[in-house]
Image 1 (cartoon, helix red, strand yellow):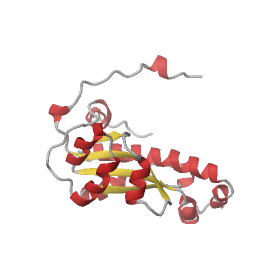
Image 2 (cartoon, rainbow, N blue to C red):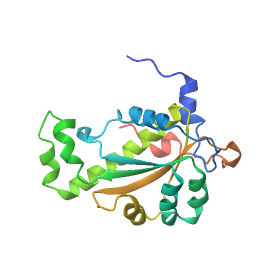
Image 3 (spheres, helix red, strand yellow):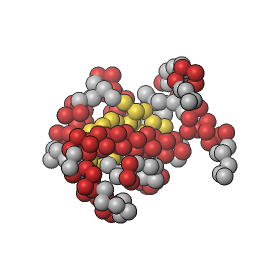
Amino acid sequence: MRDALPASCLDQVFREARSHNGWTPERVAESLLREVYELMKFGPTSANSSPARILFVVSPEAKQKLRPALSSGNLEKTMAAPATAVIGYDTQFFEYLPELFPHADARAWFTSSPALAEETAFRNSSLQGAYLMMAARALGLDVGPMSGFDAKKVDAAFWPEGRVKTNFMCNIGYGDESKIFERSPRLPFERACAIL
């Protein structure tokens, strides 16, 4: 049996971590973004399918390509964030299953059902996006996940071939503590869970 992580680690990743809306100007090194990926890639996905495709938008030119797709509420904070991860999903992820899941012919599970492939890609890229946020927090970064954008415009700007589709976005950097909202309440166990 493994030991539980120390309380300070749980605080950093969950209890004291916040979704950030403002950012310091400190840039995030490419090596650190790579380290985030190297951690998050170990999170489990269905049949190790790993459908997430991530664009780390950091250059001024790439940020300008992102600008027209953002809602007014997300525009300023995204332009100020040192990095914005666009988490997409590869609609043809199953092409990699012979390499990623060699135990069975998992590719055939999805080539025969486009609806199952789409559902699996979306669900598992969502999981991988959550792993990305936890990995970033574990490495000392702050995150600000968001909807509030036009996915079709993002796809047209960054994935025009249509194979990859945008799921959600997450700003990454070093948060400006003065711009955090009060923590919103969470549901208690009894209202959100049941043990059967």
